Amino acid sequence: MARQKAQFPQALKILSVLGALVLLSGAGVFLAVRTPNAITKLPDFPVTRYMESSGLWSHENYKITGRVDNVLLRSTNSPRILISIKPDGSDTFLPVLLENGNSKKPVQREQKLILEVHLGPLREILCTAYAPQ
Image (cartoon, rainbow, N blue to C red; front, side):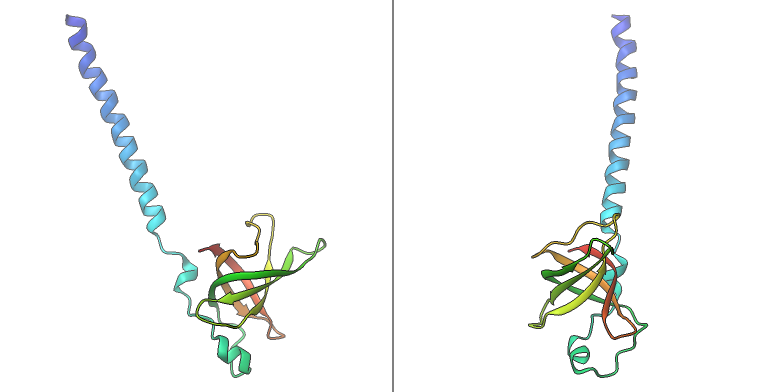
């Protein structure tokens, strides 16, 4: 009987340490999921101003939230791909040059993405970062 009483506090300590670890890991996952994405804080890309070629600055960052319509051009020599994306709330399809390095997830048709974009020197839309929506 003395052994059983000595084992009970030890088991209680082990269970309390394991419970604390589970709570801490759950809190860490909750905070990691709740942290806002830096891309979502950017202003929306002005589609109509871009289509009318009226006064967009090439060094400002914007976000495009939408669905990938098609992967138009994929090159084996370059990590860049050309995609066609339909922004949410618009009927216009935009061509976007996307760096698709090995560290990023591949882009597919019908995929919902949030893109961080800016205008290049030739007024092309360049994507610097993207995340699934």
